[in-house]
Image (cartoon, rainbow, N blue to C red):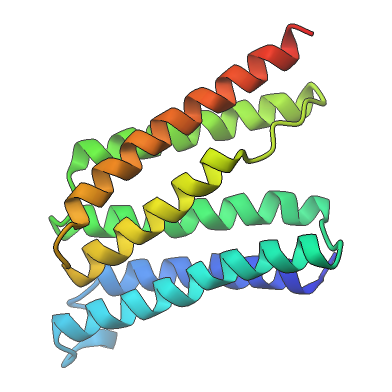
Length: 180
């Protein structure tokens, strides 16, 4: 159960609240004397490291046949925690449109509930290719917004569109498998 992919997912779980702390608790005594721009850089660095663990845990799990039930739970949970920390932190910093964040988070909660329902019915609705693309675009958007680079808002809305579309794909796949 405790293999490298699961350890990487667990590291991502731990890094998400650290990144969130750097974004939203800027006046904390722990961060006193650190300029806000450095907090952005530290949050972005943590985000990049955590995002890299997402790639490597999946790659290692598939390549070395280390896919576990724990990993199937930890990996999407860690992804959600990381993107949630990024999007909510950015929204609180006024760098992300609240409607975009609302749409993304609502879809994520709905699909998580759908997946739980699918598991209880012994239906496999694993991540689709579009779901993986959605995650990558979300992570790129978060990175751009963290660094306040041009195009961050456009990437955020592209992520919203992909998020909603991949959610539609999950629902369609679930309904097709239920009706079989």
